[in-house]
Image 1: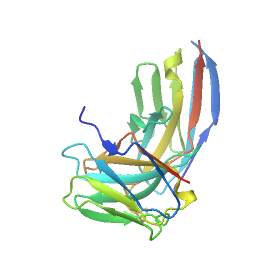
Image 2: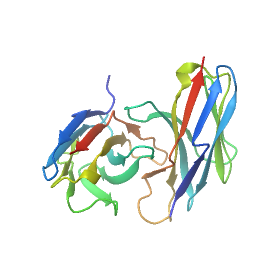
Image 3: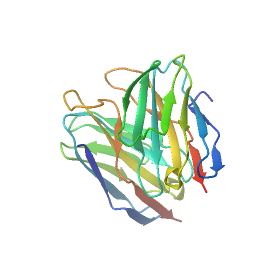
Length: 114
Length: 115
């Protein structure tokens, strides 16, 4: 299967700890997106990359969050000093940049902050 | 600001009972409207993209339609395996400000199909 993959699938951490998630997009997809989804809500946009350039960050993305895509392939999302409110499903999606593009999502990383 | 409202929040059907889900949207220039299916604990699975009013797309028991203000996902003779949350999302077009590529999602409709 050559879909979007995310690692880990589940993460439990204590408040104040740092966590890092990884996303591997579909090969040849030059755009990569991060979204966050809480229970009963739709996914909310966090940030996106075109190749290695981070082109936009949501106002939702506090300075405790940082994302990278160093070689334009995989991406990491780091949350520093986690808070209980960070508990959510973190979703990654990828697409090919074109006028009409479809974003394909990975399975997500479920984060629980105790 | 782009907004997407889905109704109903939850829908329970008997197997074979057809129905429709609604997605109303407000966006500054629509680039595309997307339907996804999401099973519990999994990421959204792409179903359809609609680009202009009047467009329709079909896949098995599902048919998506689009007007200038809303989209419908029609489910014909549903089966229990169609049970899932159905998400609608919009992508704004040029001149809307901010990102032209992010998806703005509704809260979804939780569909349950009983055998």
